[in-house]
Image (cartoon, rainbow, N blue to C red; front, side, top):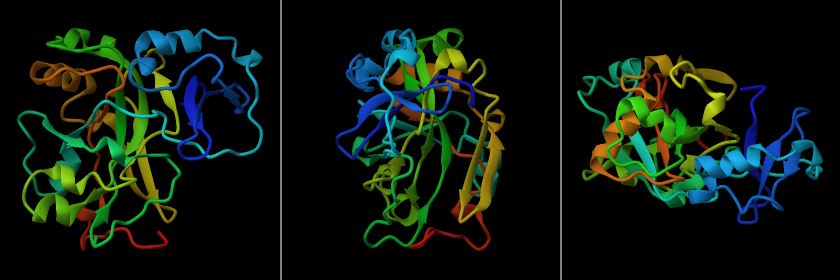
Length: 265
């Protein structure tokens, strides 16, 4: 994604402003033209208006500001489970016949470079790099052939997970997925028109400098279009909703022996 238009949010936590990366890699301030990136203001039409601005005429942001979550807030933070063939195999699970749908608390949203805080009492905090899909217009019963036209853009997500809470404590997965800071997204929000094939993207994650996840969205069991269409049969997807579309192999839970995050990692 080196030459693509990259929207972002910068500044201290809770005081972020919308911005865009210019061709020289400098952050330009969009706050005089864009309310923020969230809800309808992260929709297809809103991002198109921002993309049409003269980027070179926008103020340059000096220094090295913190990069925040690429969305200020989300109406819903949806997730798809066991959606990579090799990941399903490493967990010993049978590939699902239909997408496994669950949610993360919207309060888990975090900046892409913020420190990951291991929750109090956690012993199995795990990592999951994922392709994030940002919905750009309301979706109800959308056919798969039209689904991608409802996507505003894409981002990177780390679907951090506490495996004991997710798997061993009963109930739904949401409580193992929703600790504060367990939803880093960004750094960039790239508009959908810049990504002609969301099933041809490389995904990777490093831990302490070691590559532990290295895959492609081509290994997805259910592609982005199928996911959006499928979800729209059961619920209404809203502008600004984000969907974490599943993680490839290489998570800590799948290692032998399992490996989980520790202070200092």
